[in-house]
Structures are given as structure tokens and as C-alpha cells.
Image 1 (cartoon, rainbow, N blue to C red):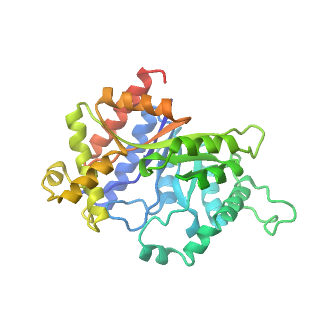
Image 2 (image 1 turned 90 degrees about the horizontal axis):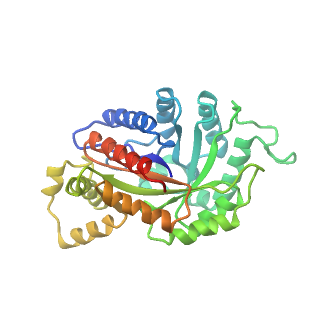
Image 3 (image 1 turned 60 degrees about the vertical axis):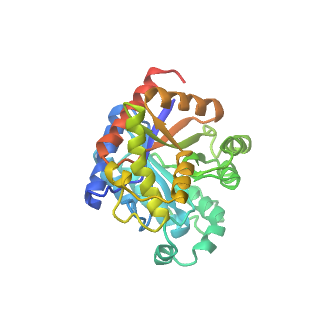
Length: 335
């Protein structure tokens, strides 16, 4: 089973944004050493505790300090941008790092209404135009507009020898069908969805139409995991993540991911406790044996080609340790 990393560049309460971004590079380098297939970094705007507003900048930095791991966005929030500019950026990255660049596409705003308005005009209108924008982006990346198209004489230079691989990220039947129609690889965000992922992935597989002869359907399943040497340790690490998510939902969380002690002392109402229990349903938490069982269950349930892991902890060393243990699990067992 191939495994990969989704990083949201979390900022801990004892960190600056600069330190959090340096830790993102450390994670990418560790992932490469551990044999992970790819490293993607998310795009969020003015969200408490996250430093990933410009993935294209970080990918240039990370690509220059790694050698083999695939790098990409998870995801470019396309309604904010013109497809041509996105293609130029990722073609440039693909020219610098041949055969290593993915461009994941999403349609979420990635931040508050105020941040959305500051980023772009007519966001909702652009969301409705998403299928057209995705189609244009693919043509720019493949450099193959029809001869009668208005952009037939426009190239997203520099045109690399190996084009970036486009992925569509989503959690709905609509996104699955769009990816299938345009012959894109598909990443299903299980960690942020309560929907029937199995049905959605099957829908994608059944309707997939390859853009090129050698292409076939490909699915990444993205899950949230916190693995530690003991179940108790994993539960403690997860509490920091969960309290931070709770604070963020309540309009707090500007100080970043709390320490374990800060998380334990957070005053919770009964409603807060119920919210935490619901959040835990979307996170795999445990030692290697418990996590191994959960991964086996996922493999039996979902028809995916690759498992992408998002892990948030207060201490960056605990985050890297979690990825180390996950790599050991996968290497020790034939899934």
C-alpha cells in the first residue's frame, strides 16, 4: 500500500509561523527518507493555527530540498484563480522538479467570508463555473487546446517535458463524477466527510474516462491519523489537536495548537465534550497495533490506490514519530 503525506503546516502555541513552515520542510524530508510516495501541502487563508496560505511558494522551497518524493498542492482552490495562472505556476515547478509535481484542485473557499472577498471577486459564481475552469486548466497543463478554441495559441510557459499530474479533491458524488469525466485522478477526503466514501469512489471508478491511452483511474483516500508508541500517548497527542479544532470552530484558536497541558486544562461544556466525541470519529488514534487494524479495515472497505495521512500534533517531533510508525506498519504488512 502506497502512503503519502498531507500537511496543513500547523502552528503550535509555542511557535512562530516561520518555525511552522520550517517544520513543514522537515516533515517533507522525513517523509522522503521514510519512503512516502508524495508530500502535499494544503491551501488555507487566515485560519487560526495554519501557515499554508501559499502552497506554490512552499513547494518551490520543499522541492529544492528534496530529491525523489512527489510534491503538490492539496489543493489549489481554483475558484480564486484563473486556470492559466495556475498552469503557469505548476508548469514552472514541473520544469524545476521533473516528474515530481502534482496539482490538486479543490473548490472550497479555504477561509472566512472576509478572506474570500479579499482574495477574489464573484467566488460563488466561479464555483458554478468550476467544470469549465477545470477543463481549461487541464488543457493548459496538457498543452492541447482544440484548434478552434480561443486559447489555442496560448501556452502556459514554461512547458515542462513532464506535465504536472492533475488531481481533483472532493467529498461528493459531484466531484467524483467531474474527476471521472475529465480523466483526472481523484482524492477523497475521508477525514473531513461523513458521506459514504465507498459509494463515491465506486462512482468515480465506474464512470472514469481516460484522457490519454496510458491513463487509468487512481484514488487517494485521505485520513487523519495520530500514532504513538502507546495508546495513552496517542490519546494525549490527539487531545491537543481536538481542542485546537474545537477552539477554531468557536472562533478561538489564534494562539495555535495547544500543548497537552493546555488542552487538558481547557474548560469544556457538555456541548464541547459532545463535539469532541464527534470529531474523534474522523481520526484514527492509537499505537501501532490499533492503527494497523484500522488501516486493514480501511483497505477492506475502500477501493483506493494510496493512503494519504494528515497528522497534527503540538510537538513536531511527535508528528514525525507518528509518520515513522505508520511507515513501519505498512512495511511490515502486505496490504
